[in-house]
Amino acid sequence: MSNQARTHAELAVDPRVDLAVDRTQFAWDRTMLAWLRTTLGLMGAGVAFDKEDQLLHEARLAEGAALIHSGHVVGLLLTATSTVLLMIVCLHYLQNRRTLAGIKGSRPLTLPRPCRLHSV
Image (cartoon, rainbow, N blue to C red; front, side):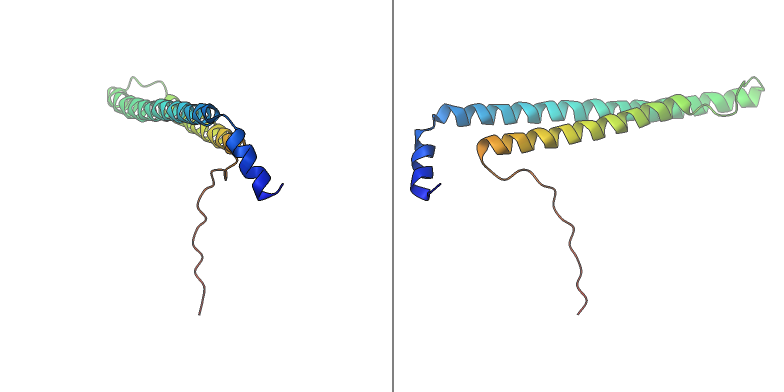
């Protein structure tokens, strides 16, 4: 497609489409932030539960009433679940951003590449 035909096609597009795409992008951003807040809360709860369980377990060990010698399972399970959930949410968000970039006709969201040090 030539530049002139592309410019004409872009001018013929309703500007409300761009606004709808922007609203969709903002909605996905808000959803991503909500999931981040939820997963960080789960991680914090896992760590807090693990520490509380550790303190209670030490008190029971001192009394000689402990049934098991390690009580970290629930805290680790909450933390591991929230970490997996966070990875799934981030991958889904990046996929949605790529789809939206295709609709807008812009470059998709990419992660920055690490710097390489060249030897002289």
